Length: 139
Picture 1 (cartoon, helix red, strand yellow):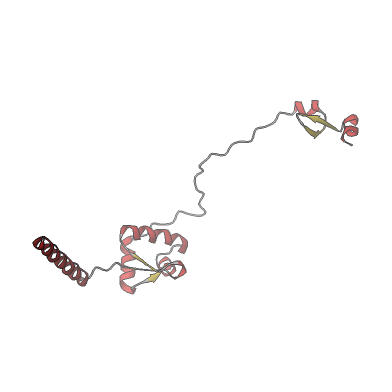
Picture 2 (cartoon, rainbow, N blue to C red; picture 1 turned 30 degrees about the vertical axis):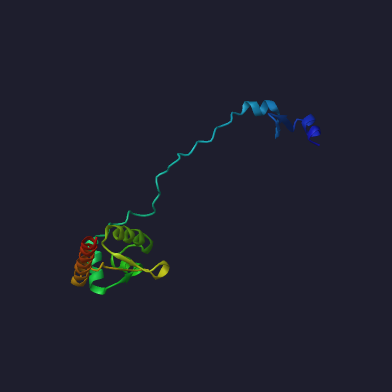
């Protein structure tokens, strides 16, 4: 069937494949190479760049109301809840806040910095030193 159409000049076997038209027509049309896209494109953001969130403002919010969800914090600082998650995770790495829970039930609170924690630390250090002294005296 293709040979019949080749005889009529409707198609041709050219460069290892059948194509419409003749080989002469195909040779006249230059093949345009596709423009290669860059390997690493800059991220495309929709809308304006979000305003930065101040760690002091987050501390004040959490100080007033205790622990808060990501959505509540985002609403308080006029941000998207999805974008607020990355902000809060960076604050957690800096030690500004503590993440409570996993998944959808995540809340954020301030780290514990009360006197009781300091007393417990000194108490533990005292017992550690007395234990070390006992070991060195006994040996």
